[in-house]
Length: 571
Ligand code: MEZ
Image (cartoon, rainbow, N blue to C red; front, side, top):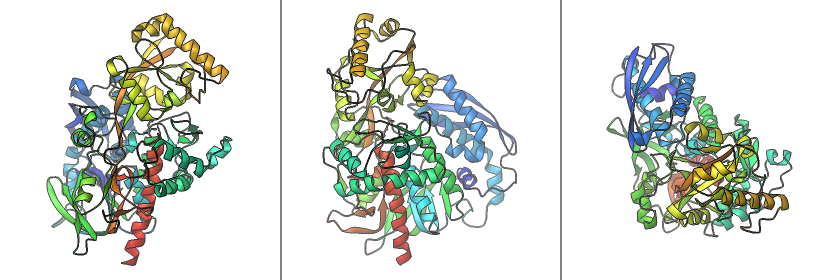
């Protein structure tokens, strides 16, 4: 009950009564391989201060990044901490530590509102719809469902909403949007379909891709109608045209989408959201239809029945054992995913007969920065950065698909490469500012100095950049065949980020049809079970294109929510 207090606050049920027991509370969270401890001071109504007490070395993110995060939490205050997000394990660990402390501070307030039997802060015994997972797919399904007036409960096993969506940076793909039209970009669902099938080596389910491509523009306008800023459109690898929509100035897209969906959800009187609520299994009746879930809250299991369930629990990128089981070459790889991406939803669905597809198709993101423990968005390459090895030489078309670029980086000395860019790229993409603040970007006033920082000779790096700039000007990259080269790298300062591939997206998962119904191995539908997002397989085939995960979660999240309601209405 203590833990759920924050959730209740999030959905707006808290009165003007005191929200905290004033005092200073200690909280703990898990960073990447290290614990983070904080001291949070609260008055009856506000968070006053947050101090970091200890942080194991591997959880370290950089003082500036923590100061920024602290500032955001203080500004958002307690009721909104759920929608403040971090981009890394360390920053999310910090947020969890703050929430842990706040939950302790809320103890008295929760006790006051307790009722007989089940507390007000526990779920009811029954809802129309249960949604498992509070990332972008779950939040999209929730918003679509409550728009039809049904009673929905959303269970998120982590302490904060957002899942992997909150970490997304580069953009949400959509073809034929009004925003593209304004910028004179000619695109179509058909071109989007072709790019996605080609990028996935035609292993994708073409019907699912058709749905994705044809509904993508509506997904973007659904978000912008809710207030999301998706006005910047950039290029990501594998796309024939610019179709990755993100906030103006090239800011990170994931937090914008989660904030938009969560704020909208917060306005609904028929939606209850519980964080730190882990669904353990799916309930079925004699006919095999799904009738609810068992959810673990604060160490206790509760049966919650429902007319339908939407599974939106994400993939298994953070479960290295599971990933290595399907692709042994990935044993020991780092991941860009949040700690909750452990594949439990896939296994739960499999346990009641769901078919799984493409489980061995696991994508690595080529540009994970080991020094910052953070993914560096593909948009940096899209906006003009190149990749060089530690000898200062290019070795690949930087806009090749992720599997190709990852394999080429792993073939370089030390299995690393450097992402090199200049001030004009920096100015074009504000997402880069957070990398600089986090302290893992090498910076130099000229190429000779940058070369020394990455271990190359100045002659080699200068020659590499000259050749690349010549290719930009002549619009022909004779060395590597890069097709989109938006700018020369000629404006000091120059920057380099050390990168290596890390597990990013698990393309496999439960099999669905275009109505987001979960299918059995014999092709029949499991009644009452819908799924969307990374928990599903088939949309992305053998390789997902950057920007398509967000298109997937919003498009199929909405479809799942709407179709679950249609099923409920017939019951
Ligand atoms: O879709 C993605 O995974 C993506 C665009 C990631 C990124 O590099 O920003």
